[in-house]
Image (cartoon, rainbow, N blue to C red):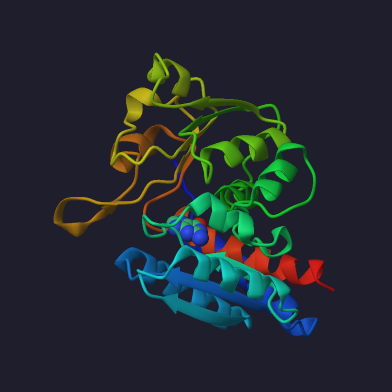
Amino acid sequence: MSIRIDGKQISQQIKDELKEKVKNENLDITLAVIQVGNDPASTVYVGNKKKACEYIGIRSLAYELPEETPEAELLELIEQLNKREDVNGILVQLPLPAHMDEDKVIQTISPKKDVDGFHPQSVGALSIGQPGFVSCTPAGIIQLLKRSGVEMDGKECVIVGRSNIVGKPMALLMLRENATVTICHSHTKDLKEVTKRADILIVAIGKPKFITKEYVKEGAVVIDVGIHRGVEQKLCGDVDYEDVAPITHAITPVPGGVGPMTIAMLMNNCVEARGLQE
Ligand code: GUN
């Protein structure tokens, strides 16, 4: 029987632990959330982040800027928030409008308040094993594996996808857990041959139901980062769940797998940020 890794339950557990910590230690924490424009998906994500803050007892400050806001104005707002002692974390929802330089905006956020873990200083610290904020989705996947009792030490881990937000930090985190790590991408010659070696297969390619059982070793643990709206509006991942699940040891569903973990880890980073600003 394959184990269905329940991200909803594990994220709830993490949020409850954080809520308890905030209450017991009487922590005063503030997250500033900036959204530019009104991309509908971003509005949903930002709304969920605000709700999670409320649940845990973190104050959220919402900045909703019009689509045509000049880049300089956004940078000025970030500079002001960097200086404010009562603001612990700053999050700029991506994607930004085309006239803005995302890298420049991210680099303007103080690394001490970079709760998304996207600043080059945060990424650099992760790559040399120093403390710093870790990108929320890969950090959430590590928690899913640990809290499901999946051993990583010495295991073959194959990651499909090399994005800055998921694939690359995921590889660094798995390395930190002493896994043997391979990253595959669009130029990988024989993808099936590589993915079939994985004890732990992490998929973040952005193609609905791309990974079928021909890509997976019997008894592997499969983590699906993708989320897509398929036929009849039904959500699905990058992995063909019905096809793959029966041969796995454990697998994350979509929805209810990796997705809920991202927000739980953002909340965790906000609590950590408060610790840095004592
Ligand atoms: N857009 C999609 N995912 C994310 C995320 O994790 N953080 C931010 N800031 N924007 C996003």
